Amino acid sequence: MVNEKICIQNLSVRYGDVNILKDISTFFKENSITALIGSSGCGKSTLLRTINRLTDLDGNCAVEGKILLDKKDIFRDIGANELRKRVGMVFQKPNPFDMSIYDNIAFGPRIHGIKSKIDLDEIAENTLRSAALWDEVKDYLKKNALKLSGGQQQRLCIARALAVKPEVLLMDEATSALDPTSAAKIEEVMLELKQRCTIIAVTHSMAQAIRISDKTVFLANGMIIEEADTAKLFTSPQEAKTKQFIKSALG
Amino acid sequence: MLARDNGRKSMKISDYFESLPFLMSAALAVAAVSAICFFLIAEGMPVIKKIGISKLVFSKSWRPSEGKFGIFSMILGTVYVTSMAALIAVPTAVLTAAFMSKLCPTWLYKVFKTVLSILSAIPSVVYGFFGLMTVVPIVRNTFGGDGTSMLTASVVLALMIFPTVTAMAEAAISSAAKENYHSALALGADKVRSLFFVVLPAAKNGITSAVALGIARAVGETTAVMMVSGNQTAMPQSLLKGIRTITANIALEIGYAADDHRAALAASALLLFAVVLSINIIIGILGRKKQ
Ligand SMILES: Nc1ncnc2c1ncn2[C@@H]1O[C@H](COP(=O)(O)OP(=O)(O)OP(=O)(O)O)[C@@H](O)[C@H]1O
Ligand SMILES: [Mg+2]
Image: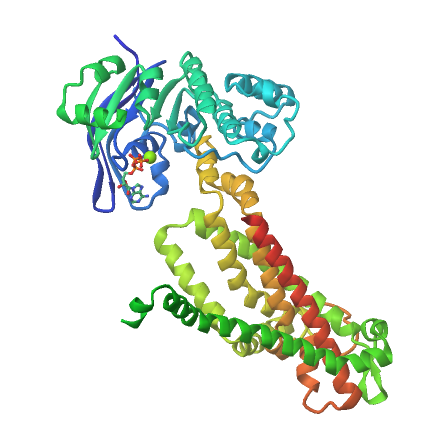
């Protein structure tokens, strides 16, 4: 019996009168990486944003159905802030806060009541190591984070997300704005993180999905067309739409 | 037809014709600014030469009939009223802007937007009238005196610059740091905390420009202030005593001033022009930095 960290049951999401996600049900296994693939506008980001309730910010967004985190309903049994502490997110565009590298990392822990310098120092070192950034920045922790390169910024954003010890990490095309070397580094980081986190990663790169993910979910037009172990989905897709999508995406 | 026949050359001519109105308008604007500048210098220079810039700026007595043209009290009046107005308006405006852009529901946002644009379209004299009819009596009844005072003027001025600062700050906050805001929330921070510690710092350049613009507007504002500030030329003494600003001084006296008196008013206008111009240059630099 697999451990279902996140379980989605009959989830529908509407913006105004437009149905973006239509009756989606699936689950995300603990300590695994799941890739979300599908063409632009099919609702991948919306699904991620619903999982940590960033969709709450959009006034015209209506959500139906259930999402369970460790069997608890995220809309009823868990407060939005607590949920977001447990379900972290890394965005497509690297977006460090306009403050020092150290303060970027310390931002989350400080919110959640960690004040001691010793603890914060330790968190900073550990998360920066996890994000494969420590060696590059350890002597410049007081430097403004916006001075880092794009790839470094994105790794900092991962470190920042890790600093609140999330159980789940949502990554929305986290490597698509980066050069191949930086992207490869982040992929390594993700594989490492899998030990402690459940990762859900939206990606437009089939190669990346194949390299890092255990399971792949293919969305089209707001519906799950097919989901399977990654190797299986890419070698023997069952649905015609999946075949077609993979074929065109692999070029 | 012709355009097609002549190809490239006629393209250029039509381009030229298209841009002509823009070019002419721009030239007109530049000409106007230069003309004002030239006029002020021509009018004001003689008196500056005669009594000296430092005497004009730092001498405390303004008695045109005795040939005393010191505008220090009015400079202080302008500085005090402007800074007090900014002190009142800026925090309120920034908080309102933050609330509008991140915390309030869409329908309320629309209400705010409409109210702000109405507020910024109200003519200055109406603010002055409002100040005279409501703020002046309140100040009089609460603190005594005749009600026209530095305090009253600051409140009215604050009210006037509030919509400008709010609208600009709101634009800055909304455009800056959307991703930052989401990232902060995604770390479990509440909205207020994300706003204060992440969004406002990220929008600081835009907010600074908004504040600078508000201050520039406050420095230049005449009518409303003149209606509620008492206009005494004496050195400002307290919040509850009257003051006169540089602009009010010009507006009040230019009608009958002649010779040196007139030139002294022109010189103070020149000074004001320089100050507002510098503020605008600072805004420009900040704006460029943002990009
Ligand atoms: N705040 C919003 N208001 C209205 N419609 C929205 C909003 N956010 C997203 N949508 C719509 O939802 C649909 C799905 O968007 P979403 O961002 O989830 O797509 P996506 O699969 O992530 O696409 P991409 O691969 O391009 O990132 C789009 O049609 C989009 O226009
Ligand atoms: Mg997306």
